[in-house]
Image 1 (spheres, one colour):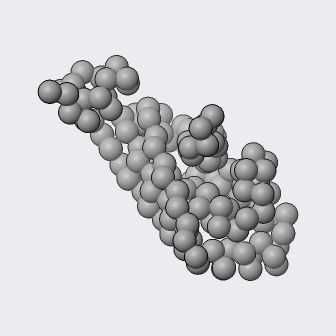
Image 2: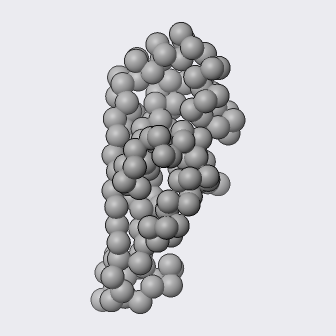
Length: 141
């Protein structure tokens, strides 16, 4: 019988019994608070925090921006650093062909992830009313 753990590891080329290192990060963002900040600071804020692709994908919707902001924070937590050593735009949420969120790391985030041996990332985004949440898992051998 093949377990879900086995199926998840086989595409990465890891033996079934290989030790796996997993780090998780989670963050919650208050959507109305972010909307107020965006209204007050406009492009000065959004262009500092979000990539052009993220801004296009979100279409100005604060709940979508909030979920991406939460993902950036969650990645920094999974890396064990927080925002600071990892710049906001070093973490980008991109959509795959089916519209599922994926992570693209650049700059210091990418370097830290490589140093820690993380080869795979998973992200889940959600928003409901005034709250946006992101859960991130970093996986490596």
